[in-house]
Length: 240
Image 1: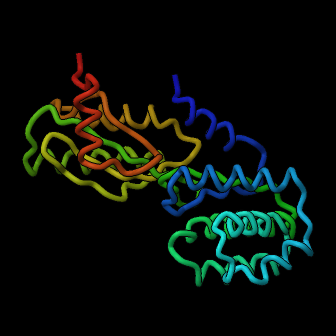
Image 2: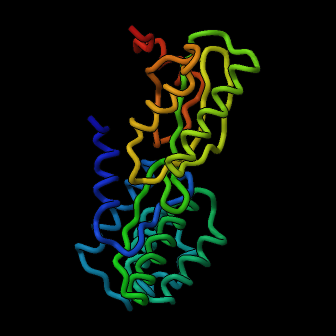
């Protein structure tokens, strides 16, 4: 059975839309959830264009973080170039604390403008690790069965790249550690991650068992060494 989140994403990909916009930036998921929840709220409550533009004129001098966040969410919901320029100017000068929030507002407003001007049905898909074009980014951990020498590392690297290329995916990063290997890769949203992972492991273990069939995978964030070791310790990752 497919992972529930992956199934939902694939269903979205199959909706009749003109363009899918995957947020490419690595923005913390809690920030994204907070932003889009507020974005929906301001839309439900209604947005007065003149009032929002008036409040936005003094945006950089506003000391209230909550008020700035709300104004940016309101601006992002206005399909006018003026709103986009205000958000863009703020993004270029704001502190790091609001950088991610302003970036999300920019993305939402750009998609809204494009949808209006081009008469397209567009959707935004966001994950913690982001993506590129129609591909989502994943962080995966393979558990070693044996100690790796250079030849075994090469097998993992080559076989992973070959399988992912067959699915139009891309390996971005591989790191070999004691006991496990981590990777970042991109995969088209319509592909079944579980199927791809099973294919990768099958090819890696084709002539010699190198990695366990169980693995850790997420599109939320890159896991730290401490987090990986915790997952390995708390879960039974050894094949039976």
